[in-house]
Length: 292
Length: 269
Image (cartoon, each protein chain N blue to C red):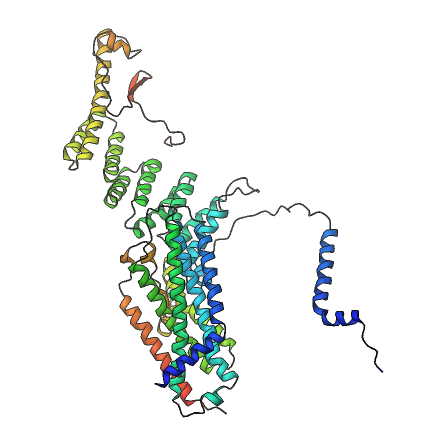
């Protein structure tokens, strides 16, 4: 006659699988606990990061190039900006490839061109940033910011005035509220690039008279006045040095000698400065923005 | 009309297969994905939310479609329910068309629910940060959703065809998703390969064989017109959109005819 199974045998028979899982889980925890403290992160030399090329990414994301662009941008924004512990710098070469790939997948992506300009252009790779910006200019036909950033890069890093002015004009056409300032900027970078201030003054006067827009004309009139003031100061200095046969040591000598009655006012409020024996227009000094 | 009875039956079968539960959890997942994705963008959270929401919809709904086709057709043949459903004197095309309309209709209903939720979420996110280029949730969004539904029609027809002549129900999933992958990606891949010359060793030969695909598969990538909604510019609607729409419709009609013909001549033992 078969004996009745005991309670324990019944329980073990019924809950075989969960009990087995629980037992192996406990063994696992025990093994992990007993294996000692985790050893230090082994120093694997991270050579470079992988950026999958654009056609393959489209395939991987089931044909959705927008998803590929978004995922790559999120990856870049979330992990590309941290300092690599091996090199002590951010992974610049990875950023170059990543930005270019996203630009191929979705050239209209706003985060991409914004970050590319900020990271690449100011990180030493302005050509790659300009590539991304040019694709954005072509794609985003309503947005004034890509041509503005591109024009600024051309002026600031490459001193390419013609290209910069073209870009600022494109930006001015796309933006109602910023059009005047952009056109003024385009004119001023040309005026400041001229060595001879009389030539620059004639150029500015011509631009002021040709300006159709009243706001632009006002702005240029102010700058004409400022330049006229500088020319007046330099002429006064030349007259002083000719009359007294010694170099001018301080601007107040012009007043005390009676050559000019008062310093010319600067309608922009920035004023003039006198150093190294020459009058200059005082510029706003923004740290980090000195021309290279 | 007999087809209405089949539609009703198809709806009941789908509901019995817990379609509403699946749909509900998909909508919840969509909401979570959209809200989380918007956090990753500095300048355009609403645009990224809309973009990723549309991608999620375009990935999730074909799976739902395949599930419904498996439920309504593969199960029929697998469990031999045709012994009762087809034994009465009724036209077979009513069975196929009725159930197809039920499955596609339910998927479109789910698409509309997801689209409404996405629009609500994106407008809420858009009120948080004032973007320079706001998204458009009006006519461009409606056009985008309409094109997605056309894309789903092509996939529904392919899933239907596979469900009718495939012997294993698993093949419906693989076949439809594989078709979706190729049809959606080949035009983008060809365009990208033309710009990026050093991906494969001999790009000209590779592109030749790829363009033959254009005769076999409809260009579902051309039906992805979300840029008009993302950037509020109807200019992004491709110039040949009537061609793309008509191609997709003709392709669907052809494959539907093929599956009707296959069902009609099938001998059930």
